[in-house]
Length: 206
Image 1 (spheres, one colour):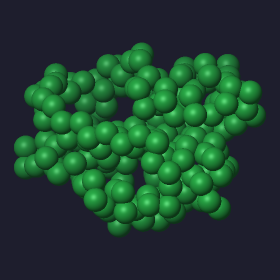
Image 2 (cartoon, helix red, strand yellow):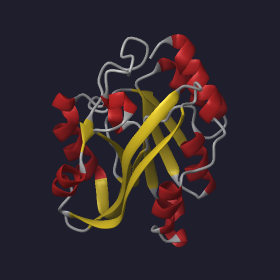
Image 3 (cartoon, helix red, strand yellow):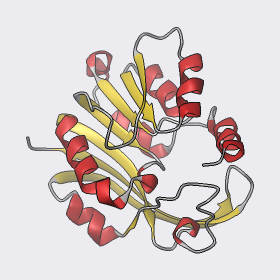
């Protein structure tokens, strides 16, 4: 993403409230266990979700491919030893054992050639009973069309559908599945048609 758009996006999202799916994912982990549990924020951006996870007792590993995201989060959480930050891609990040992996509006930009390997790594790092909560881009989203400016934003855009997603995670217990489709404005104030699948899943087997 171009520098101007990066800063606009992070400015707009740094203080946003936690999404419903993240709150639901956290609620699935008993409170008595949270102070010994690890959460991973995939594509941590300006750190809003890290802050929410810390408020609920998790140690958090956050990573993002963008240097600006890591710089902002390093400053934001500079006094918190329970936050670990890494500039990395989905495939290059070393996933620690975790009870929650959260990927909100980030796996949209996982290169298609890396997706299967990334999913394997995420599944492998979760403890039995752990939660994977993520959102995925549908084919009707503006980012999947010729209206999306890949030169300004990200060149890799991964799209999928309900059938493929449910097949990919058939070995997990589906706790919540939602298809969102609506029109609105991006953080940069541009018109956008959203088509997103949100999933919250529990690992049930080794």
